[in-house]
Length: 112
Length: 108
Image (cartoon, rainbow over all chains, first blue to last red; front, top):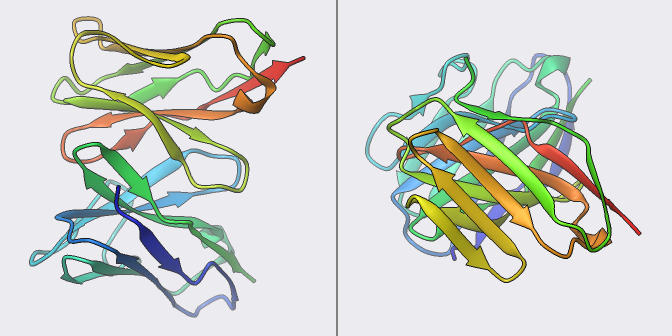
């Protein structure tokens, strides 16, 4: 399975600012995904990021709020823009392969 | 309607018993289904995946898929206290949508 390095692992941010989360994979993968896990909740898919095309966002998520980059087959970023306390969550990246989906260690974001 | 439905529990079973976790899905286009275990403060880890009707066994775990009924289950035999975690059922086509997760507590 692919190994994912995600950073930062945690951050505390002021409302109104933006944070960019990075995911680096140790092998080339076609599909990368970004999830949000709010406190006490399950994982919610934000978007699918494929190299060379615009990210596909799930219902309830928009590009202006969560812009995503996918410059190559091993790297992606998710930006959480104009943050509010409601954005306080764990954000995880994931890659999909034939034997399952692997997750990064997550970014714990607290907005104050 | 949520695409994947799970009973959030908690499900409490005694040590050594069989834990049965269930999930239904609405998208008939979903091809593969996955069971993940998530300990508090950790990322999800894959237990099993299944894409054919029937049963798939791996050690103490058995996944079952019934596409006609749009139903997926996970059986954990000889449950151990270390199995206490949240179990996430997920499925989809070229993406993974999770249910709400079921909290399992195995008590000695």
